[in-house]
Every structure is written in structure tokens, then in C-alpha cells.
Amino acid sequence: MHVIFKVIRQQPGAVPRIQEYHLEAEPSNTILECINRIKWEQDGTLAFRKNCRNTICGSCTMRINGRSALACKENVGSELARLEQAVPFGEQTDDNAAASIPTIALAPLGNMPVIKDLVVDMKGFWDNLKAVDPYVSTAARQVPEREFLQTPEERSRLNQTGNCIMCGACYSECNAREVNPGFVGPHALAKAYRMVADSRDQTTETRLEKYNHSTDGVWGCTRCYHCNAVCPMEVAPMEQISKIKSEILERTDAQFNAQSSRSIRHRKVLIDLVKKGGWINEQEFGLKVVGNSFRDLQGLMSLAPLGLRMIVKRKFPLGFEPSAGAENVRSLIESVKSLDKSQQVTLTSETPEPTGG
Image (cartoon, rainbow, N blue to C red; front, side):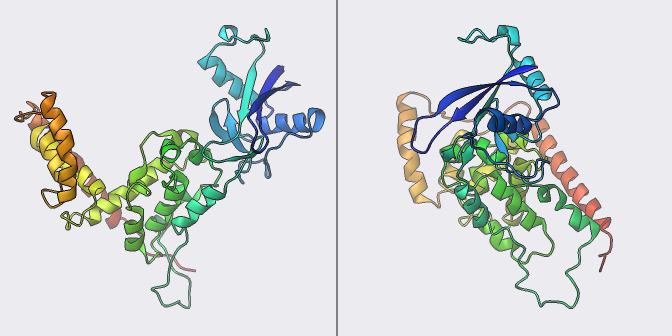
């Protein structure tokens, strides 16, 4: 089958350009096999990363037709089938009159500066991973004669996040990282949850305090699901971020007061107000979240300009009318909470004894 590969070429400091390569390929050929042939047979200057060729090292990640993926995992047949489903080849338009020829576009990863062609500088990626301290800390324990033991259930909590191969696909597609340079990224927070979930780690509270820091940590996630969609190892980074949030919220139930961060207040006040009235009382929401129930004077002052604009535009509600379905909403929320608690109790009661070595 004749396939056109459109590759983004770029030199440091230069404007990107598109270069086309025509190749005879089999549907079973991986994208990596194809660009290897392009480099060996057509253009030795083409730059890209590769190593294991077996979806283990994560080196060959690039954007394939607009999404970040492993070039050694995706093949020509499945990629063209995906494209055909999105836009039939007969309906594609192309100035070079090659609309009937299937085309695969290759580009460097996003959220990282380009070094050359499909090779990006991953220093920021690794620096952000380092920032979450992705190592088990047993500093508070006396080193035992035997290894630190875990039950099979405790070890199973680490399986999903342990599958991460640091390919950078989630980081490349992260909308939060694109607009917030301080956000550490989904890869780092997925690894962070592995440390939180590890029964051998002795710094859980310190970690949660660190991950709770403004929008640089878990509260910077916009829940766009792109990280989950592109992860080749089904680590589901956004789910791990949500688990860290839950851990933070559980630990702050007792001290939901002036010391609580605005992010935590936002989550808790929203649920409480929906339980109370079926939907959000915006006046009460602003005062409790931004103003911290009149404890945060700076926050209250920041609401004043908005309040004045709303009054001028006659958008300021004078009262609040609860939803007719508030009772049902309240019942649903309580049912979900009860279900979560019962599942936690079941897991605890079924935890087997530690296994040793």
C-alpha cells in the first residue's frame, strides 16, 4: 500500500516545515518501522528517538495524526482505519491531488521545546517528576533484618501506576500544563499517587500537603481526560490525581476551617450547598469559598468589584429558591457516600496477612 508520511521538520530556532515522504508499507508495519525505512532509504537527516521497539521504554513517543502515541505500538493499518472512521479518504482535500492516497502526519510532542524534528527537550518533564519526590521514604523506620513486608492487597494498589513507562504522552496532551507552567503534570502526579498508596512510605502526610499546593499540584488538573485517552499503558493519570484529591479531602474533614485551602473549600462547599438546596446558592458559595466564611478579608474584598458589576447589570440575586428535587439530590449524595464507606470496610476486612521473604 502506498502511504504518504507528512513529517514536521524543525531545526533549533527555525520555523517548522512539513516534508512529505512516500512509502510502500504493509498494514502490519508499525509507524516506527516506517520512519526507520524513511531514515535508512530516503533521508538520513530525519531525527527521532527510539530504543526497545517493544512498548517498554517509551522513547519513540510522538504525535501521530494529532495525538501522542508510541510509534512502536501503532501500526499503519489501525492508524488508517482510525483516520478513515474520522474522515473518509475520498472526502479529504489536498492541493497535490493525492486525496485518494492515505496520509499519516507525524509531529513532535507538545509542551516540550523541540530540539530537532521529532526530538524534544524533556528536561522540564523530568524536573517535574523529581519535584514530587517519586521515591519510597522509610527514613522514619529502623531498618529491619528482613525486607519491609506488604500484603498482596497492599502491593496490588501499586500495579496500575507502576505500569507507567514515562513516555511523555500524557504530559504532551495536558491542557493544564499548556496554560499553567507551574503545574507538574499528570505523569508526576500519577507517580505521586504510587507513593501515597505505598504502605512502606513514611511521609504520606508531608506528600499530601505538598501535592495540595495551589494549582501546581492536584488542583491544577482541569479534568480534560486527554491524559487517560492517550496513555499507552492504561495508567489513567487523571484517576490517580482524583485519588490524591480524595486522600487530601478525607484528612481535612476535621479541620475544615480557616486553615483549609481554597481548593478544598471549593469542593466541600459545592457538595454541601447542592445537598442543602439541590443546586448552588452563588451568594453563599462566594462568601464561603473566596471569603472563607468572613475569615478571609482579602478574599472578601476581591469579591466586591464583581458584586458591584452584577448589581449594575441587575444580575445580583436577592434571594435563593431551593430546587424542587433537593430531597432526591441529598439522598443520592448520601447513598454514594454510604456505598464508598461500605466498600472501604469490605476491603479492610478482606485484607490478608503480610507475606514475607
